[in-house]
Amino acid sequence: GGSSYHWIRPAPPARRPKAADEENVGLVYGLLTSASNLGGSLSPLLSNQLFGRFEPSLSDSANFIEDAPSFRALVFSSFVLGYVFSLLSLCALPLLPAQKADAQARKRAWSSSTAVGWLSAGCFGAAFCYGLTLSVLTLFPRTACLELVGGSGCVHD
Image (cartoon, rainbow, N blue to C red; front, side, top):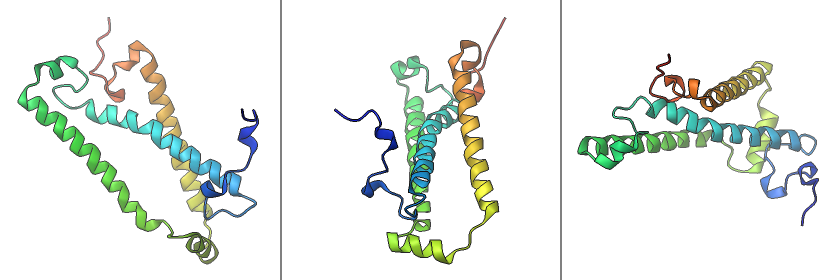
């Protein structure tokens, strides 16, 4: 068994952020974990929005059963697009420090910026609000059909 208070223990050394000092490792670890979780919850929402625009619909099982060559090409292009976005994320790798010493050196040498902090917090907050709004819209049948959330469009009485 484990302690029911496992969430108050500090992060294990292997998972500690390299740029964090001992006094703020918890804060930095929490922010990085939250950003990672936010990305994981936003990606299906954004995929639904993007792939909801494809015709014929990737959400309609009848298209998979029919298995037309044009639909196969559409499915293939959706996979290619997904892989392109995944590979594009690799462009951010040069921005990361190579080792802990590099991270600490950057922290000492680079100046801090309140504007960058607020911009980062604003982006994080906007992404959170966007994801929360779309997630709530998908919960209700009356709004789950909206094109905004990847539906085919609503036709109401």
